[in-house]
Image 1 (cartoon, rainbow, N blue to C red):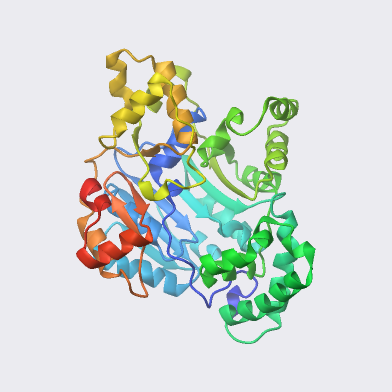
Image 2 (image 1 turned 120 degrees about the vertical axis):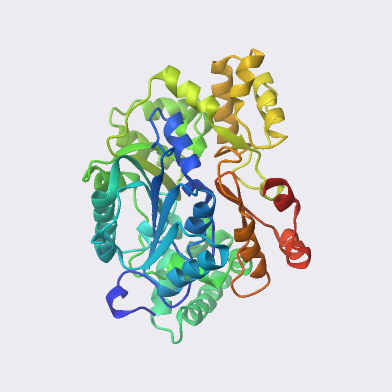
Length: 447
């Protein structure tokens, strides 16, 4: 299952899914800081970005090709993950990304440049307390003053009802033979039999209620890494904030944009309950109880300068945005709200021709206050994404050609880089078309 040194920390015999996480992009993190009233890192003269627990390295590789003035580092315990990222960069001609197969303790001791961004997606709750401390130590040693930290993790109380399912799966898997997938399958047979026999406790949580459908839809590697790590434990936000405060990190906000404005997630009575708490960490914990949060995308900063309101509003309207691709139209992060406000309609109309900055609408007489309010509302509803300015990055053609060569094979990557500092996910139809003719509407319009 695991190497001896990582036995109590991680599952290492099954690679994780190859994913691009758009919330890790500099433009997304910058926008999060802006709407929360903080100055994001300056990137004009170059910057450094690091992902801890980078998996196959798809996110750092695709961000590197779209940010030629940045230096990108991916760190992961599993050598096959780091090797995949290195091979992708070789094929795609990406020279500003590197990968290290190390645990976080060894990575913390590396001689590295100070980072403007350090990100860790999900891994913090998949490892034990010692590895968590090593991750925090890495951030403490290598984060630049004014830099941003993204830390996402499984959280309580939303996972509470699924804990019996997770405990039983892991306990059964520990007693089974074979690799992690074989042991998971053996455990699943017993769990499913118990569910069918009426063990209602296994269906109380969100995962348990949809267990059979999730097992059909998601790859086995997802369940191996979600349920079998020996150190896996969902955390309360107050626990994570306490660890962050120990190295002088201050909460900035959430990379889940809508969670930065209570009016988007809580009704009036709930907002009054939350606001009655004087301690900001307690207010955040109360929100999680009201929302039954299962996963958080927290953004922290160290010595991050606040922005005066006029500067904040100007920088928000100067941010570039794009309309999400149609492949994400059914995403839970998108809202069916029509946004009939004239300012919102103007923003959406502007972006219908491609990524742009709403600042051009100021010259047409639109009030900056209306623009800012609608930008935040549209972003919170998933109707627009913060991106970088078009034309500010090198071509993504070679990287996307390298991705195309992998289509239909064991190393397939279901994402394409866009020259605005992000990437999009392809659906099954697009993957099949790309495999046949090498081109999709997404590649024609955005590269």
